[in-house]
Image (cartoon, rainbow, N blue to C red; front, side, top):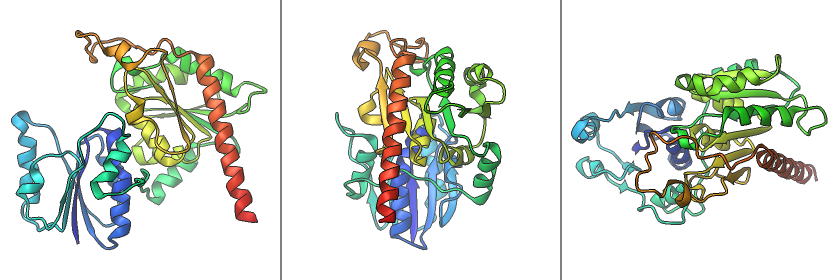
Length: 327
């Protein structure tokens, strides 16, 4: 069986689509999977079972990237084309079945919306695949016997970014003597092009306590997140990566809609600004490319309380599962 799976350019949206891909892999064992996505997201899919090829879609003027993708795909008969970009491409390929997601609505989380592409309710949760090299690298990066807190102080536009100084103060409070995560190591994450945003947080962590994950590849970062006691980050691809990994994930929201993009699953939580999205970005002259941070009303105290509440909730859930498993 040949499956073409067309997904997002951005890391976060691609992660959110991964549950649908996992469902297809499990439903069709032995299928040959071709994935088309943007360059930032491509490394997420290198270990997909049955992977034939990842086609990197790079935007071109006049939508010529779709023509290039068509040329890459037209020579094969597809049993199923899943086009999460809702392009016209699927209708110009030789395909036995074509599936596109419904249009976005005002209430549905993105994962729920994507699940409806294949009529799946509840939708499959996002998940990724790693190789032993990713797991081994993660284990080498992390100190044994200490809880790990991951911080992601970056995002793809400035208005979504909580300040580096507040991330640093949060790390100090969460790891202070007597705190529930006292002595935890602090892993600071971000893309290699985001060093200027992430490095000040890492530099503020006491010597011997910080772990530099800035620029680390995505699947090793995912393997690290699976080992974390807590993740705190802005609304970003790394936030969705942490949630998919099963880390207790606190997402900080302001000028974006958490009802669409909250960390998915029971181990995720949201803390947002006092102002609504409309209050923050409703002005007709708002430009997300130039706006400064709009996260000022999110206090360190509020994030600390939300983070500790989430870790306690997840710990209680884990204890309950262990008790049920041993009975």
